[in-house]
Length: 492
Image (spheres, rainbow, N blue to C red):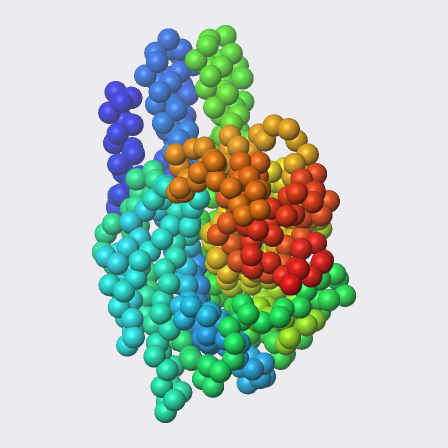
């Protein structure tokens, strides 16, 4: 009976069958039914297995949805191969420059999905077709499931006789194929659009990467609060634009956590049997999951409305002369966060300050493909393995990881949580015998090599870490030839 009921319930919940009650009520009723059966007949294992399947349904969210993108819906993006002049008339645009002549299109879903490709994503424009695009999951390993996906679109050809913008219309999930890891299909077709404008008259300038960049100093006096009237349209993206589908069920985590808490109270009275103890352990693991989710409440509050978000947005003092371009800055420093969340609200950010927190991982940060400057100083990173997402941030130019715990611990426990070159999940041709010019062995610093080898950093700060000796600095200079500043010292 229980086995048949489990299959029937799972199918009805996935299909959201017409006339079927809400998931909260269905699960509540099913728990009451199976709890009564377990208490009466603890020796019937089929009831215990049905209870386990209910727990999985409780913890797992439902079908995936697209919640955010960059460019955001309704936005105007100013494209240039080099920096355009800092004219106030450009304040209505979300500017982006790239010497490669491409810009990213980022899609962010509520949960990890696969099947994002030219068949499931349709792009209509006068200069780009879906067949021109290759979608890539923003994830460190070879899994084809990811919350964030990116493709790169080639700039439209410049037309000096016309200043008309180019409209791009994006359709997601019009055809089937996008599916989550737990088997739920993408069932909410979505459309959004944005316009791109070309910045003309800048072709004679040198490439951005070749400019003699000023050092970025992460001091409070170098950041200024936004002047809401003049800078608001450009610097702070409208939350209505950021969120494509506000589909989250109100207080969804609350009722799930309440169900788990009630089950814990019940099973604490069933510790006389081994399977009861195992079930209680699973329930305690689930409640810890929700406590971890609640640790992200602060970031959810920060991004809950325009006013609270704007309190953390600012401008960098040397905006005009900086070699990296016009920063869109967010400062989340010194707020005691231990995990990064609400990433879908920050896809537009190019300068991020996460210093003086309790972070030991930056999982999820790989979705922020526009990020140019990142401050991770004075946190709790104990190894380079925890910084794996940096490898996917191809626009990153300035990185501060000073005053962490890198190199302090002999045993790197994050190696068992993060991918490494010794695992089969890394897409790398790493050679353990590889030597850098000058006789510096990659073997001694293989974790750092995997992080920094593909980055084109201009500025790096590593002071205050146990690993930051002269040998390691010499290694970095060879691995990252684009470096201009190291720990505040000019290299070239």
